[in-house]
Amino acid sequence: ATVAAYQITRKNIATQDPADPSRTVLVGQQTSRGLEATAGVALSPRLTLRGDASWVHARYDNYQQGGVSLAGKRPTNTPAVVANLWAFYQLSPQLQLSAGVRHIGKIYGDAANTLYWPSTTLLDLGLDYRIDRHTSLQARLRNATDRSYAASLSSGMAYLGAGRSASLAPQ
Picture 1 (spheres, rainbow, N blue to C red):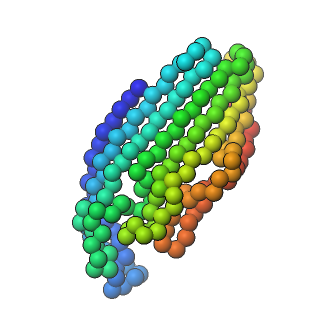
Picture 2: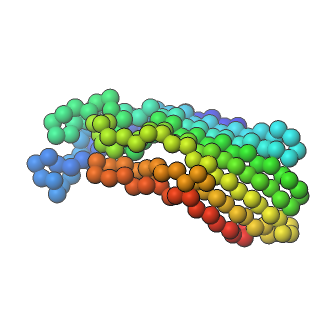
Picture 3: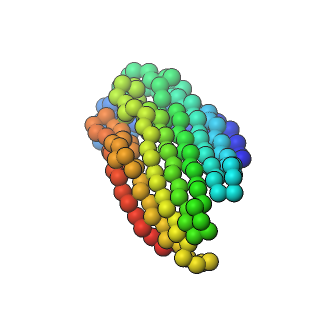
């Protein structure tokens, strides 16, 4: 298991110049304080769990946009929490099943925090078949429930994350 704590201060954030939209100006300050943790445990010789999570308290400290103070607002596309939990089950020496959930917290698409996309949780599935000591075949089904979610958000549009996708690849 590992745990890390951090604080990052970013000064001179670039933003669009209200007097000339074709230019950017450097203004304000943003502080992010966070905690990240990861852990794994073998519940039995066949079943293993692995998880990780990050929590971040990101805020504009001193930031103005169009003459309006946005101090205390969360920066765009910065979820407060992101977490993953995976289970791996060894059916036989050659065959392993896996299932994982990915959780992404709510994100804002504008600095004023008026436009947002809600948190989402995605399900991924996997199957690994060991052909020999050096080769395996991996099948993956990402976003198995085909859930719509925003990979990023802006004032004008949401960029949707990948829908359900499958892959089969040698390793």
